[in-house]
Image (cartoon, rainbow over all chains, first blue to last red; front, side, top):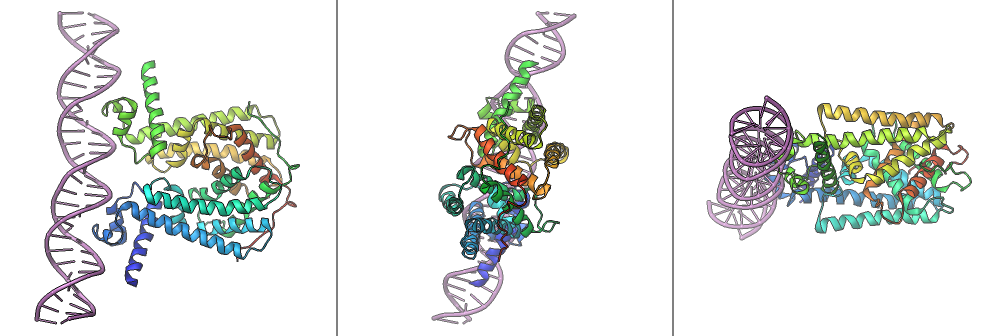
Length: 200
Length: 200
DNA sequence: TTCCGGTCCGAACGAACGTTCGGACGGACC
DNA sequence: GGTCCGTCCGAACGTTCGTTCGGACCGGAA
């Protein structure tokens, strides 16, 4: 049954690319049929619905990010800031290496329903907890852990709206810059605080 | 013709709310008909197409953000960091006050085509230039201006995925935390740099 | 040779979509 | 009173959608 898995993977890859380009809702099963080489009806031998196709892409991608992050942390040593940097660096480089899937994961996260939605939420919580534990290890944070976590995810998920991995800025460099920006902002002593401006 | 404008505004408000809840593609003109009180055909007396409806929401919203940011900057004094903080604070509080429109602007930015798309791109460029000029005034940045700009927009646009303005964290406080996180990270002297970790 | 289960597809189904058409209604002006 | 114009709508149009159905093809077991 190896060929079966290979063809399913092919279908998922093509679908992720098309969803990333045109959006999930705007892509029809007929589009995927043309892009994948399968007939329209043939697709339904691999997935039971359009929604399950989206679910498979997102779930597989999320699983990869989480296990990848765990592996990166396992090699990151003990120092809290170094571990945080490793987490960020892994997320950014993984994002750059799997742009289509990560864009679909980031941008089409509200399309699922029922059991599939719940499963994806669980994975999201799992990944967020990983970050929260890292943030807890860093002392003297000058802003709240919750806001910091969302701000960081914003920084590193927004990537899909502008970044081109083959451009002048290589993924490792991008990860470094993001790490430095966030870590410096989050861990700096309170004395080095920017002037507080209240909106008029 | 005042009543006409009021009814158009009503339509745009309802559409923005529905698009924010269910997404642009997933919302049908029949949905908007039910939600707005207009008949299906009646909607076409105010907009010429579904795409123009999206365009009007996005263009009006963008115009408001830009002029609002200009006003905030006019009152922000001379110090570069204070001006940057004012820009961020304005963006965040405006976002919180116009969640539906800003979510539609952030999340459905790839749907338009042709002239409308070009017009929106122009507005986006205009707003980004505003930020770039502010970043240029801040000395000794430890990461590139371009990356910093995208990271900041990521932080403050991702808000729509998690923030509830009526929750425990008021918009002004959120703006403050975002300002502090970004400004500290962007303007900190290079000596206070987080440990550089290269991915294995 | 026969049969069978996995693989795949052309053709069709009913539903929902964005948009249009012809006309109804009502106040303003002659 | 008659006419016109802005406002609005019920009903329909043609298209596209996700999904299904019945059967074709084929390698291997019996």
